[in-house]
Amino acid sequence: MKFSASPQNILKYLLAVYVLIAIISCGDLGFNRPSKESYPVSGIDVSHHQGNIDWDKTAKEEISFVYVKATEGEGFTDSLYYYNITNAKRVGFKTGAYHFYLASKDPVKQAVNFTSIVKPDHISLPPVVDIEFPANVDAGSFPATKFYSVSARP
Image (cartoon, rainbow, N blue to C red; front, side, top):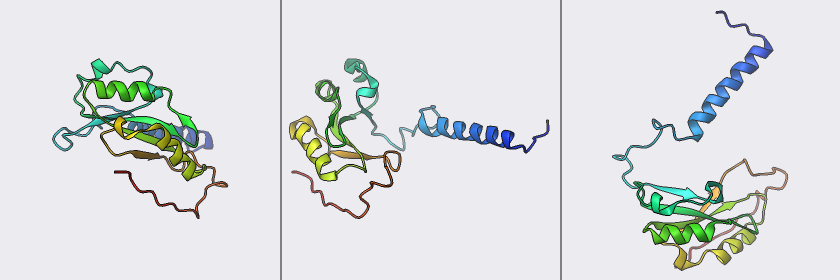
């Protein structure tokens, strides 16, 4: 079968390549999972997107820590944060919390949002900021010239 270089066929080919790359890079296909020898400590991150997690069942998995989504942007609190953080701790996982950062929003207000929800007794791991650039950026409103210093609490 000979490939015809028509614009329609080129678009089909590029779409197929894009879909294949997306599938391989975005999912756990087994062969793309890191080895236990190279990475003996493993964990997961969870949010409301996973729904109500069966934490007793999850405790039987070969993971030792859980990062739980707490907040996003300037005012969003994950609806399952308290459920997830409480139950992950209950079944014995080390826990951390993360904030989903929106680059088009005020970083100080986002920090206030996170620290108003996450308390030191909720977590045993350092807090994390999830930055997915540029997917959530409106280029016209990105505060590229603003830099802020953030220090961790003891």
